[in-house]
Length: 329
Ligand SMILES: *[C@@H]1O[C@H](CO)[C@@H](O)[C@H](O)[C@H]1NC(C)=O
Image: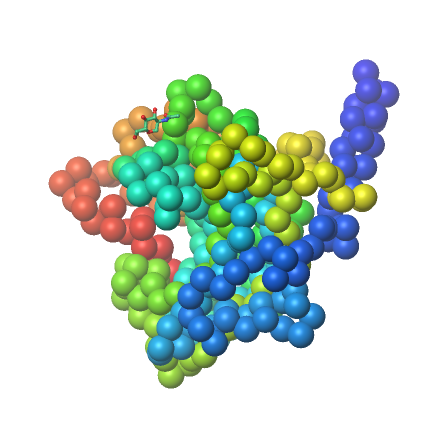
């Protein structure tokens, strides 16, 4: 028994080693993998051909998109966010097919929400499947570092059966596909996007703090861009071409034991919102939710009204809806 555990532990550390170091990532140059989406000169490709700056100023934000559509894969970027006063600024790193499917699109989001001076950026993750926009599946977190101080790697693993969001080598969220979820699990090809934009109306405390262009330009810096998955022909969705694993890079195929501990620690310490525990919004949690007593306790301490420890004001639902779309600071 002991030997078996040791073997498992060894095995999981090997997997972490193979995946944990970013040197081995199959990094594409901008021209190989992406195209300019909007914001003219506010998108700047650096001389190495691999790093990109996206700027928000009073004229416009900016963004880029992958050239190909992907059905499953591993998608990643090193991102350094703008510093100082960033209230109302939103940086998004996400997958979507909203331009192809107006009514039943899929989406996988990392959203970074700026803040007033002295308060840290917050991260939000979310998913939609087949147009499930009436069921928000947001989670929000603080971070154990200042994301405007240095580059950090943000990654999305999307397979047929699960979705995992990572910050550096820490999985922060895992969504297992359940039967009950059916179409709400993203299952059509998507493009990868990176954008910066003015989210004054909702990003910081429900629009209380707007973008202040006195502090512009706001520059989000991207590098180590990874698109590693199966591309799909936009017309004939049937032909699927998968990247072969780069020599020393292995797409993670799940969460190791070590990583699971890290994920639990992260969520028990840094998560500030999860739809699974929001009793005001969902009387019964959506079917994929796996409730954890530690997480529940942590969230209740953070916000007793939303997470069900305190008195609920049934007559005031609108207020609550507004308050979780717009994060508290
Ligand atoms: C997605 O939605 C469309 C119509 O909105 C429906 O016909 C289809 O069955 C759905 N697919 C899944 C996998 O639920």
